[in-house]
Image (cartoon, rainbow, N blue to C red; front, top):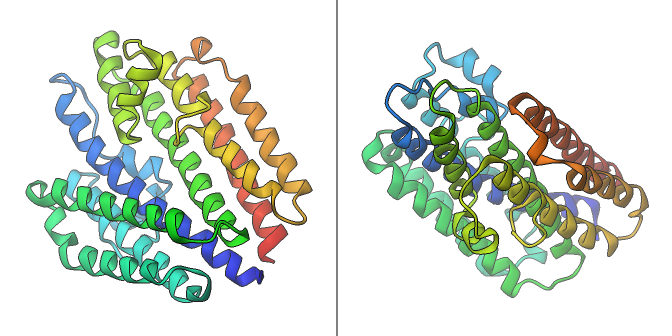
Length: 305
């Protein structure tokens, strides 16, 4: 398999997943702010920080308010991680890899881009935002399901799974980091804890599975353990790394990358959520993000160079 094709498929999967994740994040964060007790001081400035775009955001906007933040994450052409740009990047990588992808994937990603371009401005005010973001999520899920159900599960699909799961793991650490930052807010700690971590579960579509699997109330240490360490939740960091390890093990020249994935996986397993406060949880998440980035770099060095 040509390295340029592998790279394009990997990035196509990452951009599709990033689009869905960004839509989930904006939706969930809006409802979190509505649910927080009156007087709780938290604003939209957290989202550019969590998505890694704070400096870029600050270069273009003076006010860190809702409209500017939503426009930055959904529509701004200068933000490479905006929904509009992520979809455009996914489409371009799909276009140049059509020989190994199902034909319907190209059709669906074009329809996704047309929908997003036509309706993104409707999502800047609150009235049309939920409908737009929900539709984006559903269309990304359809595309992910189409690839899983119609694409040959060969090395090309291994790179789809690697890209998707690496992006998922990265976003899950960022969602947990929002929770860590929010733990420092003034107010009734117990009440805030429930609101914040329920929202973090919903951001990853994990609330129902958490209640089913854990059979516990929503508490910080239990949610952190579930989102980082659960073996079966599709968006937990542990599960994503296990999926990546499985795919990488099928590829040639995998030894160095496999060792690195297993190192990050051991880090995840060694975290003790019950012993963490806001600052130490942030430090653990930061370490995981560094590890995930190192895996990405090693993948590029091994198969895309």
